Amino acid sequence: MGVLVTGGAGYIGSHMVLALLDAGEDVVVLDNLSTGFRRAVPASAEFVAGDTGDRDLLLRLFLTHRIDAVIHFAGSVVVPESVVDPLRYYGNNTCVSRTLIAASVEAKIPHFIFSSTAAVYGMPEKNPVAEDAPPSPISPYGTSKLMTELMLRDTAAAHDLRYVALRYFNVAGADPEGRSGQSTACATHLVKVACETALGERPCLEVFGTDYPTPDGTCIRDYIHVSDLARAHLDALRYLRGGGVSQVLNCGYGTGFSVLEVIASVKRVSKADFPVRVGPRRAGDPAALVAQSGRIGEVFGWKPELNQLDTIVGHALAWEKQLIEWRAAS
Image 1 (cartoon, helix red, strand yellow):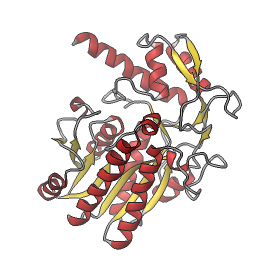
Image 2: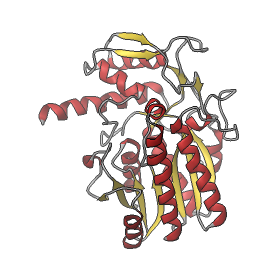
Image 3: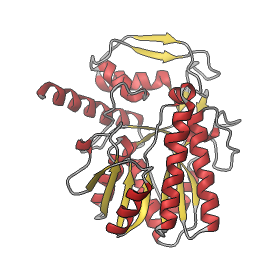
């Protein structure tokens, strides 16, 4: 049987493809390359250029490749952008997901793994935040993901579909073997932006707000290594294939780092100083968001392997250096 990975040419999706191939799975990648990169998909995976919202294409792929599981990454992911352009996010995230879920039901695909987000929690009353905290997203991005979770819940109650929705916290780092990483131009991820600045690819790093109710005034986030996250999806797939019931689970380490602490780590690992300036807060940014992370270990047996901040930064920095070398050689 095969696994369909939507958005498999993107940052997290490409790491998922690597984890699946390393585990001996047959993988089909569906990506329209609007933000992904064809080079991120290994030759041993079948690549199909197309839209995840194309029902007819989905049904052909399900039939041709004997797909038994969907892992859904395709979508838009920039929180401030979602505030400015909410309808794009409801289109790319919610509407496309609805088409994919419907096609999965029509093709009798039994297993579905969804790339959700900690943004569904909004500004939680306490941190770390557990899965049973009431969702209250403060951005269209978070709302669009929550709507897909609800569609999965209701669809699973009505049809023979079991799912796992993984609520990611802040994903960072790169494949330790240097096979993939965050390649998006003009990315907004703090670790990537800080690494680019340390390597001279940006003139300075902007900190969005220093007046939050946190120890140093900057936002606190739970950073998870992208390869640990990919392993969590692999564990979810094994769990579903083994007869596991549907789940909604946090993906984080349960430890928070402030923006200034991340900047200090990048300076420490890169051995480079770089200018930092303070800007205004961004819309849709909660002061702190840290996972209560025990449940995923209880359900899957998942254990993090790369959960040191300097390790995450080191792999991200190595990837940025590799990108610079590629651009210089092209």
